[in-house]
Image 1: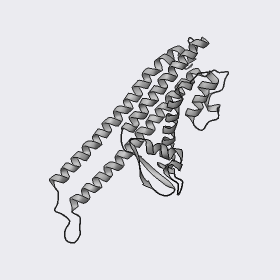
Image 2: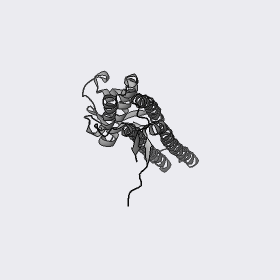
Image 3: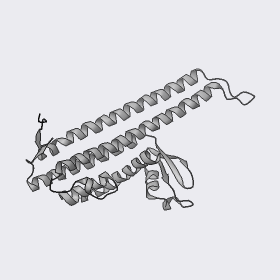
Image 4: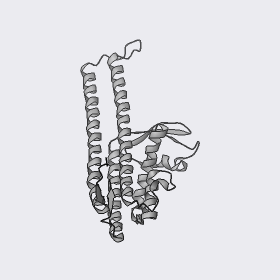
Length: 245
């Protein structure tokens, strides 16, 4: 039995992909916000419970009252779980960007030409950009600053996934002499270094705004890329070319 095959045009796909981008990033923002709100409510309730059941001051033997130990443990747990959630949300947002960039590239793949996977590059997003600019002929030069920032976010994502949020430092060097990624994270809001040694630093995402800022930038870049790819499609006269799905 023949498999069901449907065909759509390149023009139709590139015009409609923006709707999917808006939907997916909105869903991710909603998840991050609602989950963050739940953790904030948990923290407020924990502090309220502590105040309602607070024990006397430290006794003469130096023992910390049970409720104070309980509060410390609860808040530490909240910070740990919240940090894991924010890291997961950020990793998911970068994955979304890569996914849609791949979708755009897939629309423009010509059977007679190479694919992004065949291009030399450190990451898939780098390969995608090279594919769109060098193979397809899309001019993305005006978006270079956004690209550099997005690439920096991808480096942070890779450190979370592959290095447990740890990055290298130069021992005995001043801050301005530290590696670019270290300096980049220091300048960002919503992320901090919580533990540092002479040769390494561990960072954590502390605010959902860190993810929101990335999502906004990713959506802007994808939107501009789609516009320029659409212009290229029309210039090549291939808007009615069909793609099998």
